[in-house]
Image (cartoon, rainbow over all chains, first blue to last red):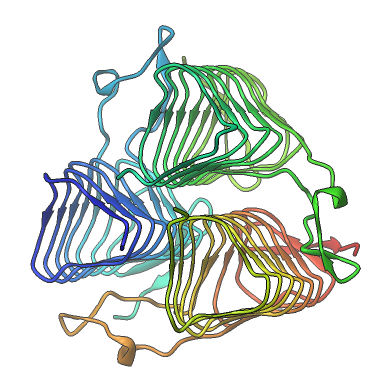
Length: 157
Length: 157
Length: 157
């Protein structure tokens, strides 16, 4: 009884490890990647190989995560910079807004509790400090932190 | 098998759409509103019509959300500004504190990862930036962001 | 149908109250403590008596929470200050990093949405404001808030 909701349209690679209470639909997850409890990954999200997606994290449509990426607990991705529930008094549908992409490059690490705005690229091996709010591109190999996130120093790898 | 825990005392309007892994008790949810995965809504919370309550969000007792409101993923509401687990060495009960209210007015949008303190009114059509911590009232039609959240500019609608 | 995943190796005290959708393994939880929905507590985490662990919170290996502590909703603890998914192209295992401890002393309160970095001690009866990111030790009886969290004033108890 692991309480998994994995839609038929999910593409799971070899040896993907799933914790419990997981909701996946329409996404791709690469070989050996681990997915923690209470994680939701939406359609048209792409997760690479050898990643760790930690508990309570939300990965939305439009997010691409390359190989070897660490995503901490309770991380939120975003695909709409001005979200609204309704247009002209009716609930918005997919026709009412355009998905804004996010790209996390190979080997990057995103700390727990971070929020990653849309239209952002997180560079290769970059590190996002825990609790940060990332509002613009993060250069490769750099550590950023804060709200809004600013460059602290070079990351070791 | 959608893993829904909806108490008998929950009042759901017409065409409410529920995702999976949801815990609702003693709350009211208006017509057409959508509720995402891993959401908890407590007793004496009121959600209007045509709202979107996104995944991983927590809505506590004392919160009123009017119609047409967008609540992002992983949003936390609060109803006690100085919470304590115990009083005089025993676990606090409801008799030990007074619920502090929060009001989100019609058409507002609350970005993902935001924390909304108690005793706050979010004005009509206002926008709370992702990852913000809202510590005081937000005027109508304004975008606020940061920790603590400050006014950035007027919002388009 | 409360959707509880409680491993056989979990030590629950007397009268522990569990909500729904909970994932516990290898941890200890003291008498009378309440645990909210969508909470995960990992192995080698220790929770005292008379605590409240609120919904959506993640408590990792290496965290010790003494008695009478309030932990709000959507709180993240951390045990690795430079997390990486992989080392030399293969997924990291427990052998690849050392758990960094966190200690929350008796009677403290941690606000909702807070992130608590590793190698930190939260002092007795201290209060962490909602949405804060705690990067260093918090003195007893003090209220801290912000990102990074700074001392605001003395806390009443």
